[in-house]
Length: 331
Ligand code: NAI
Ligand code: MG
Image (cartoon, rainbow, N blue to C red):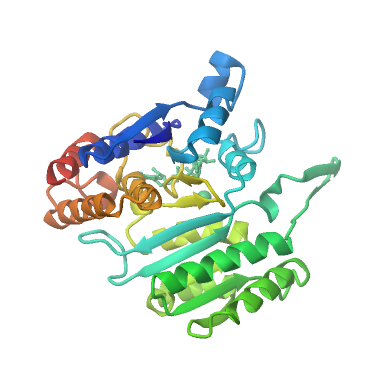
């Protein structure tokens, strides 16, 4: 039996997180769920944004399935999502972007994996106001942080038989910080002579991805670029409703979709649960349940292919629970 911490989140979080739980349970896997939430609603009840009980649960179980959590914009508390990634040192944010059948992606054959450094860069939260008219943020890039994301990327590329790694940067302008990041990706690339290595400046990379996504394979980059390019690339495969993710540390995995809490559609059963369901397949792989993970993937594939149950973002009118039920039935 494996114990997994389930964080429902807020907005569409509970809708998609419980959908993923139902799908995982439908495989018959022996998981005991420890359901603990965080966020503004929890703060009102308990006075803590991230309750102690949640931290304890994560520390003990070290496997987490997570729904998105809203972060106030320009004010208020610090992102709980970023805080959890830093606290548990999940340094690699891995986001596979693959064309699925019958989706509205512009491209037919996208098969990319984004590796985003997940603990430093501009997301350290070191910001201050110098005076009323000047504010400053500090971007921190370390050799340790850059080496471990580069190593994780190449190790993955080798294991999965991938052909090419592209490092994405802005070292023409941020010569010292992104320069250090590139020092590390170059160094690690030397240990993998069978994998092609190239570098692209991030603005050009945006254009490359929307025009020629088929030319790219595995991408590695600092935190902010990874955040932005993941959403950009999700548009190539049919949108945020489809793209899963994993936050991986040395002995911990927090699995969550790329998307956020989508307040515009929350509580209406319009959310596509597939991104969170596909994140749960990454979780099952992580705990060694590959066969069950593949069964879920096949079920998602065949429901999308049949096309009778598609959510609104995919041009259909299925409710979240309808597509979830269809996937469970296939399993
Ligand atoms: P978002 O990803 O929540 O939504 C962007 C757009 O995509 C919206 O139009 C939304 O309706 C749509 N969308 C997202 N997920 C969908 C799904 N599963 N099915 C169908 N449509 C979907 O990004 P937004 O609106 O910029 O952020 C909302 C909140 O989420 C913010 O507070 C942000 O900080 C937070 N956030 C949390 C994340 C996390 O918990 N890891 C990640 C990203 C954002
Ligand atoms: Mg994001």
